[in-house]
Length: 325
Image 1 (spheres, helix red, strand yellow):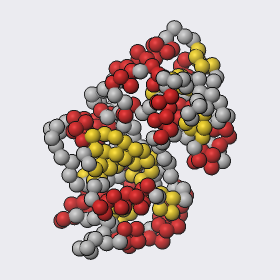
Image 2 (spheres, one colour):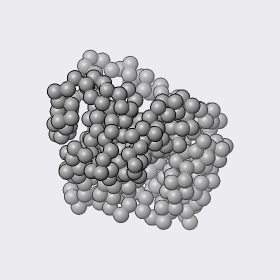
Image 3 (cartoon, helix red, strand yellow):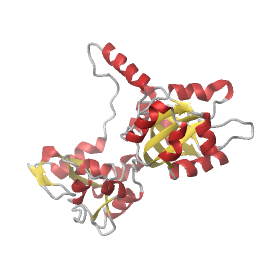
Image 4 (cartoon, rainbow, N blue to C red):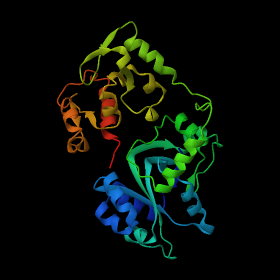
């Protein structure tokens, strides 16, 4: 996995962000500009709309070469005004000047944003550049400039330091990428566990001990089932990457949730807890015929972890959903 750093500060970028990320593009508009061999796969993989971004070739094809290094599954982070404010998972790549002109027209010099990529698993961020620089091992006054793709080891260290999660949305790898992955897999030999420094979440074990210590079973705060503790996790309500030290260790910001579905439904934003403490579903969960019966079992229940002290954390979770398009 690689981190893709994408500036979004000039007037063109801000306009494109609104036009094709905040307001995803319909597949019907995109498909005519995609390779014929990809159209059926794109239709089967993505929903009716998808977020789209693109970069110009750059001087001496600098951006184009970085785009070629970018892989499906990488995490793109958008930044402006000295902060990273948005991220998404690279879900599909296509080089298409015609598609770029359809979506964004051309610059005055005739260049267009022809190195295109789709984004899924969209999520708002609020990470200032100073914090990013510390995580990346850069000088504190380092200025992030231009489109860039960071090396895998460096990217993973930054993600871990910032408590950011890898993408989990739908992706579409091309035939060449799949073949390359198979070749790389076949070449793996011997010890497959990669070695590296491991950062531990200092508060996690302590919070689990406080909530679940000395208990054989506990009740999931969402579904209300009393389950063995090995089927429960102690999870933060507000995303950990957005929390300060106090919020990370605040008992009002955690709840026991089961691994039988509740944990991921909440974490990935398919359900949230409203201002009255009642579990609600988001639209995408209700539209999926396979997912809806599962979600319907939770909708309308009172969340057992909701109380005045935890309400602000649930409010943040509701207002910062992950969006799977």
